[in-house]
Length: 110
Image 1 (tube, helix red, strand yellow):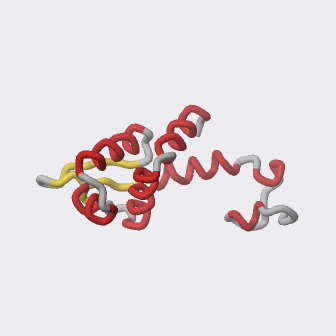
Image 2 (tube, one colour):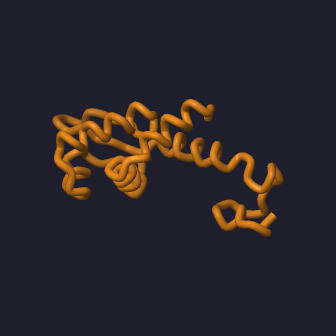
């Protein structure tokens, strides 16, 4: 992931409603959720949710597909992993950490 893509992704996630929607889609897994289900789960008006989901799609963190009369949104796990990799690529001063995850990069872990 390049810097401009990371900035776009972080910018998209830097809003409480978008972050909540993205986290819900991550929990839902690759099958995703219909926009109406997301709105219901998060208590967000459909018009507001549409705007927020569009921002997540534009940042390439979420996909949208038509399923009959529903639009199904799903998290792009490959992009999420790329963003996490970008954020942690210099973890521990460039020395590979012994274990994956935040605890591996804690002070004194390397």
